[in-house]
Image (cartoon, rainbow, N blue to C red; front, side, top):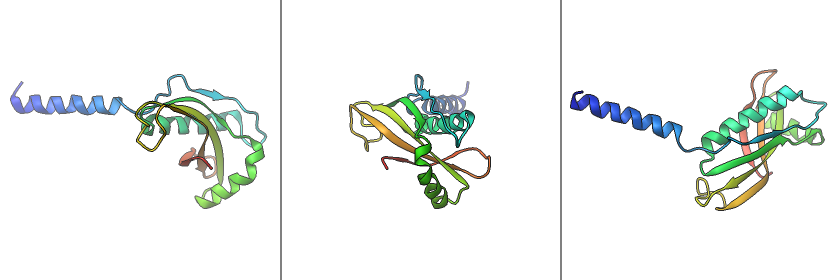
Length: 137
């Protein structure tokens, strides 16, 4: 291999390793089933998978333990979130996750557990859920 080709190869390998590393740990995350008269099990599962994908990408140093639909009793809040983001529907999920000594991105308390962390997702019609915000509400 020529020297220039070797450098490009090394840079590509590093880029792949960086893309694969980091992010939140979701390996053992459980989607806790919650009965709903508003959403089907598949709709809730799809929303949870969207939030999990975001967590995996953005919550470095954190381990997602579980995530679940907040329940139909919060339906009045769904309308407000949908209106705020110009969507037809919104759903709220809550999760529990652990933070390692790094404090995640520095905005979370190191060596702590967060419970009832909310995930707000919206959609138009029956399109895919889209993560719009998260945190304590």
